[in-house]
Length: 231
Image (tube, rainbow, N blue to C red):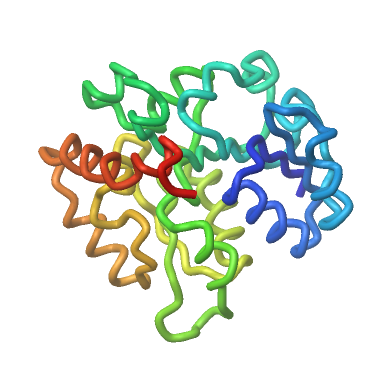
């Protein structure tokens, strides 16, 4: 597949490594430009490109950026892209600033879809980057970590669930994009390295009335990292 990734943080670079290892053609971009990714490109075999170029990927595009960066993405190229678009980001108010629509109850990825003007899936966000990088194992391994993919296009979800399986994780259908709040920061399914049964139970356990509390708890825990108190 021809895959674009916008965002070169831990999740973006980890997914790029996985996808290249599977034999896919991968382009990666960030806000600093291709020159900042030359070393990573030499090391891994990815193509370092602009965000506009990454957004032209034919098959899959992963947005691995902060919510505050979403309005600054190449919106025209995104709108024209034929690719399945995956939102792998999470909303942390202490980092991203307050986004009123999300605070009022719109799921994070619903806001991303609305902002970029096209459908997205929510995936690769409910696991910490070190686990995503190192804990993939063959199918059938007891305790294999499971990832949830939420969205409204079953065919597109099938594509992403296939990649989840290929990089060493079980995958489950997390429901519609409107259900994706169940895998947002602070929810029971978030960053817990759960197996398939455990993840299904955690998604079901999530309480819609507690979304603001989940977010506030996760944001408070992460605040020191965003403010530079910890590195």
